[in-house]
Length: 92
View (cartoon, rainbow, N blue to C red):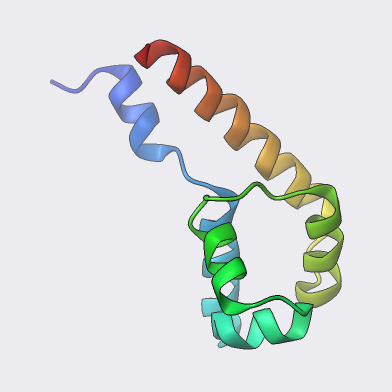
């Protein structure tokens, strides 16, 4: 039987998952989005994989490129960091 903590961990995902779902939905590749926002493909992929945090500046860049409010991206990152931080503390 899975514990509540295991289920929460399964649902934990970085904001990059939402970025990837968004660009998939509109038929855009990571390379195209990277070009549109002036990033390298590698840097964008790090964001999508959750290896780098989504900053307020990045949230505004995504708002301009994807039409999704910066406040959504900032809140998504905040919730991820809160959940990730709690998960990390529980694993120590």
